[in-house]
Length: 377
Image (cartoon, rainbow, N blue to C red):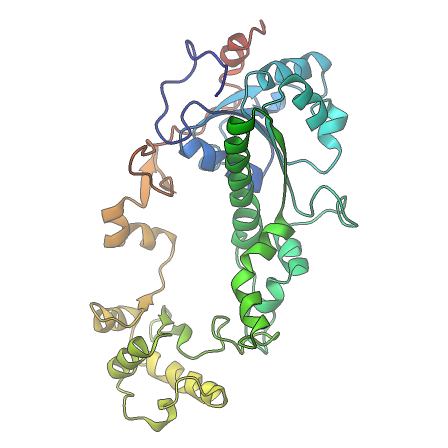
């Protein structure tokens, strides 16, 4: 689909998006994550960085992997024109500014689509391109709070937890934008017309609540924290502290798994656990399970549950997880240049992704990429 020359470009990429060229206007968080996902699957992603940082190592060695980096000043008219020359050759563009900023820079969707009607113009924001909060600042925690996800998390008597930045930035943001761009690319290939993709983290967070809203609609979810099946309210779907300060994750929802849980814990004949879904008994059941799990170390419980169909697993830290035999066997993590990082996902049988190239030095490809677009520096 791309009209860009590959004579002096990167080596032939592997993955289902090989041959797709994406221009990424440098930003932080979810927009680079979308760029990483596309690059991981073979797209040629060219990141536009600030010239003040040229020659420095990337501050985000994983999020920025798989790119080439061009350092130009977006406040300079000639540099903006150089970026537009790259847009002429691109299949998609990613920008994560506040609404209106790209337009003021001369790189808004109207300008870019007028030059390249097949372009997919991906926009990443927290609140969206319109609405009362469109111009308000915010972070992941704010977006998932307003979308309703944060208020559904945590214990009934606890403050809502901070779930890293996975729900808003990554799942509701970068992953949503990557889906939007690839979907729009399919449309552009079929119709010959590009379009704008408005990816908002509030929208993406709300979409992730589909199951919960469905349960709420049929009376199987209470609009309160810590009293439901998947929010830690159920004693058989939560984490428990072990004797050594570790934790075990219990997901014994189905009755056959619940029965194995009780058997391993020695609670099969305890009348407290006779009725799994008796919500009135859940608080007392949680207290009893806390006592039982606290009687052994994490590794002892891991050994006892290993090989059973109980849906009980140890809770691992980042480096521990990378060393787990299952993750090692699948190559879920790998190390490049001393940096431990997740491998590309999902996996494609017919067009598997290659190993991503390391994040580039900022501006390392400025002359090379601009020359490909006919811009001489």
